[in-house]
Amino acid sequence: MKTSIASLFHNPIKTLAVIGSLSLAGCASAPMHVDTGPIHARTFSFVRSNAPSDAQYDQKRQAIHAMIQQAITSNLAGKGLSRVDSGGEVTVTYLIVAGNNVSTMAISDYWGYNGDASAIQDAIHQSQTVKNENPNYFEAGTLVIDIIDSNSYKLLKRASVQRPVLRNVPAEIRQEHIQQAVDEALSDLRVEQ
Image (cartoon, rainbow, N blue to C red):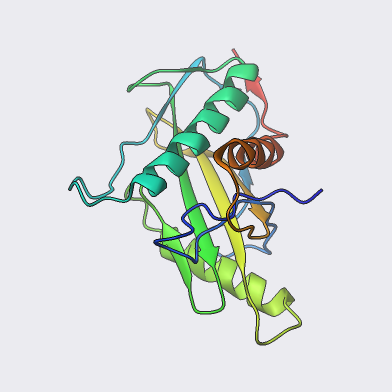
């Protein structure tokens, strides 16, 4: 069964969707896969959000962020990493890239100020449009997860996962799909205490 987080941002941002497994043949400025070996940590925290702080900020988008963070927290807890509000031994960031027949957009609210979001977005768009045999159709959602050493700021792990877009998915099913996608993306993450 193909899983999806489609309809992540279905009404206000119809282009947003899902997360899933993506393997790209590397981009020099933004490698799509990084694995420096086992992570030596006991705690993690998410990067602070760089999303707008005004009251107009989309509540559905915030709900999706909460689901993604819950899925990542659950996965990392199973590997022995405890979430702390700030100051974790490693920092987790993530980028959502969603594309439809009109555009490809990156949602970088929890990516931090890492400059490679645009390069990753371009690489994902290129990969998806090249793979697609139908020149009139493109729709996909990708989640990229980085784990960074909080002291040296060295990228320890970059994993990604891609899923087809599903529309109008109930919240419980969406959470399940997000958890499955995150578990797939981080399936080879090794943590040593």
